[in-house]
Length: 87
Image (cartoon, rainbow, N blue to C red):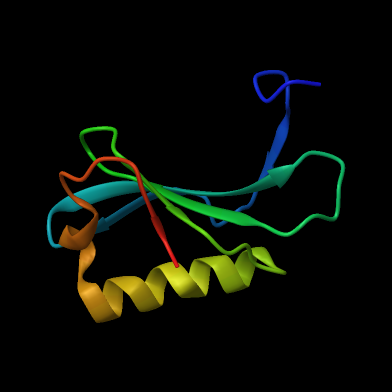
């Protein structure tokens, strides 16, 4: 199966997040039908994507990492950047 054919299961923590007038979309997902770790991706208003290098054992851990990043760096840290990853 190629990547384009891969189906994903999205966490209930996925969706829009608004802070300080900035809207981002959080994607917390894993391959459908598996118990694989969760991937965390944040897409900004312009469609640029931030993907964490490490995966998370639970979707809650991924969401907590997103919130910690907002607390530490602010939501604007996701804006106007090309695709990049977070370690």
